[in-house]
Length: 436
Image 1: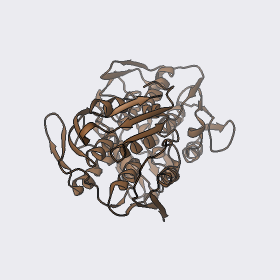
Image 2: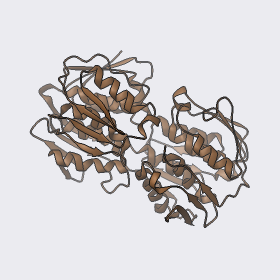
Image 3: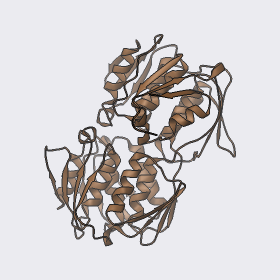
Image 4: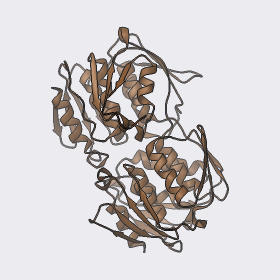
């Protein structure tokens, strides 16, 4: 959507009934992993159902500037050319807000035969990167900070002859650092090992997703006691189909749990390796009826508000914390959201942002260890919701609309990062949407 709107105002569907069909966006997590692997493919590599999100566009733009051809239409893109055969001039790349792209491209650029400068927004420069840079420099990479240690911009003097067979990385802040190393497997030697403390690994589900995408394409890392060891480094397939985004599904599952609903979600793989698929256990426990049909996942709610208090560990689905923090406002008692230790290192400090916005709305919020206790309270007429340049703040707080007559949020275009058509989809199923 256009980026020059300051606010979006949402009103509930007439009759408080949610009906329709939603074609969910493809997963940007899977798309970005497939793009990296495709850039190492010895033949044209087709990515079906790829994401049009801002984050995926950043990866596509980088590959094109690095000399990789990307042929695309609305439904698929084809990656043409091998990254290590490219001979680009010096690259100066603006990553905007794309955290995944930052980690993946840092690893890729380490092996390119050129110099790459990576820049980004102030928001992106605050996200952790030092762990990955330390790991790469320890095996011979030439990477320097151009302003402040631990922050963008950075300069990477690539070296295609760099051939490390052993890495050691801290995995206590972000799983994307480890995924970045796993994805360069096609240019690593068999037997290469990546050592890390398994007990400190955060967001394990995203590592499992990376390993599953790689294995689908013929690349196999074996999980051992203290490391992952590369046992197959050959890309054996020439295409990958991206599944629908289970993070995006959470907003519709959430809306469908708060008013009477007859909704079908299309483009979802019910066997997906995405960790956010585990959310179905919560919605099923609340009594949301779900049935797999040829058209998609059919949701039926004939009772109205189904939300009940929860006490859930979100380590395997951290991107859903905001969704369930907001849904907790619909419950009839306090909820506990546990294991949120990675949230301060996301697009914003998500724990702090949740606390600030819910407190403004009169909801009780208390920090407990590495989690939150949320005590519902009536929300009469909320002022504009701040979104902190964080797509998930906008997407999740929009769920309050079924509780109030009118809801307004700042910076509606921030959803472009993962779900560019979200407002249009809301409008298509009966919500009134106005931009200003």
